[in-house]
Length: 433
Image (cartoon, rainbow, N blue to C red):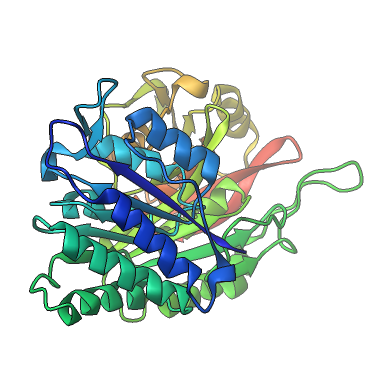
């Protein structure tokens, strides 16, 4: 597939004039003379870009490479133009939220603008390769770097080589500014885990696990099926831990981009294997407001909390905790309490203060906040009832289950349940210490 390059530029009337047309022309020449020019295509450059132009261009052009040239002001933001052609600062966090929507499409972002290392650092959470400038950069340096960068890409080299080749181009031109371009590259792996069904995704995975033989959705011809504890202990969990060790080689911090249609209990297990305290950040796909958005586990929490709807019981070994987020799970809790062979001593049912359904979680910040509070509810219940085993029923988004799994530690045994044949049954036990 061809890599599409989108050039965006802005030079407001009340800022220093830059040779942005020259930079765009030199990039075009570099691609046209490249050995592998057939592997690239240039979108129509978007000049004098406003915030509306920027978001529309990325949406409509579907680029793999986004190249911005113009002015940057560090923490104040990139400099775009307003409707009068004058300065309009683009907020860095808002820009990061935009690129977060295009993680599956955009591979590299180059900010050829002064002090744009600030933007590069934030956007690297979502894009694999982002280049910014740590100091003011003049026209000649910016152009030399850009030409060297695209010469290398056109010769079939990767983004990191192209970055270093661009810096070398600056030095070879006799300019003492090769240390200004900064590459922000986040260690990231793509882990596809297929549970209910095997589903294709845009990017190629680093590792792919096919668990469909152990799970199946209910159909006319067969009931819903989930992996039992023996399968988890002997096959699935050892393989998952093996993958963790494989992808973690040489990394102290790692972003794990996880995709797959999975049982909620499986999401909890995967999160538990990739603990946040061991340097793992999870990035998971969450469908919200009619579109798939990537949520991250390292986002600062909002002020969302649970409220306890019902709580009853006495001191004993086994406690039942149900969390209803996407809907009312109180009926399921009552049914499980009444029909289970396990001697539950206490039961707790909680829902978000904002209510259940779509209003319960609107962002990854809400998901993280509820995850933190859920762990505290379990910890407090375990202490109050002197329990050694928590039986966990989740009626929740999958992203919440991944994030909760990351934080389940030092709260004893946790048994996750799945709904099978119109009732909940134990699925997998986690020993959290």
